[in-house]
Length: 401
Figure 1 (spheres, rainbow, N blue to C red):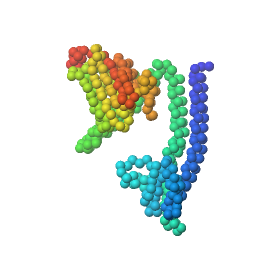
Figure 2: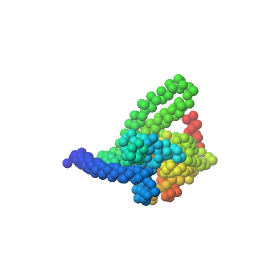
Figure 3: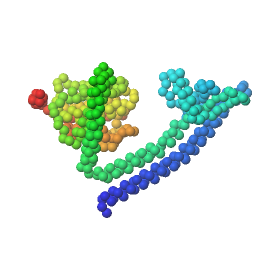
Figure 4: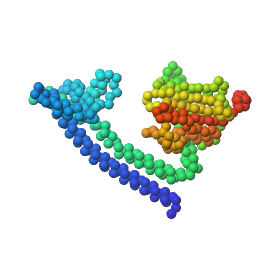
């Protein structure tokens, strides 16, 4: 049997297995979701009746059971509206509000939406039914997750199939490199045409609206797209390193990150007094530093922290250290951080650090590694590059000039 026939059979098997898992998950989830919806609706009917009893309670009413029923609902979102549409009670809502009035306003908006969707139970408070309340309820977080779960599982299965097929088709390193380079070149090509068009439109806008303050910002973003396309176009090609100051490269990255990072993240630098010169393709190498900084920001979460970039010399090597105060890396994961596909992020692809390693080691004859990491305290990545003689680099730059 030929190798291509085996691959075809494996593809068919994986697709059928994925379809079976997906259909099974969807069916199971459908029945579970349906049952849970009925249970939540029944619970809300009991809860609404308890609310009616509470509103009609007199001195002879035993409120212990009523309050227990009301307080037992700690997961179904509820908004209670009176006959004039005002909020009288709400609970279990995920609100982003700065004060109670803002919470009340958001609860009222949610209550009106649920009322319009007929997700409410109307309770009459008198015999004439002129005085009433609407108990508006939403699906619980557990129910929403259960509804989404099969689609997430389907996505995981599809990703598994794609990765498995990709592994079979690219079992050799040479084939992997061809796919990588081809994808990068195609991405650069696809980005190039619209980017060129955008640059032309920006120039027209500059001439038509010379005083508009937003156009320079648009120009910066378009140039950023052009830089990204340029970086992709260089993957797989032999780079043309030139004598470059590491300080200039790091400062350029820091300036970019400061404009696109939360103010709670403080980025600091430490440089020697003299210029540290290395042979670099600045465009590609900035990509490496940006990736390390972005990973550091992600490792800090939303709480902020500090990123320190240090440039120094160690014998005949130039070193760049990128340290953060993030959550750190587990010891068992340190050997895998540069492996393609490895990631600790929920939505990560695990390609950033592997690409950084490729740029440093294959294109610049350097090396990159995790110098140290401690859970809860942060991580330090270190890059070493061959130094060049300062006099030689100065002569080369003078010749170019």
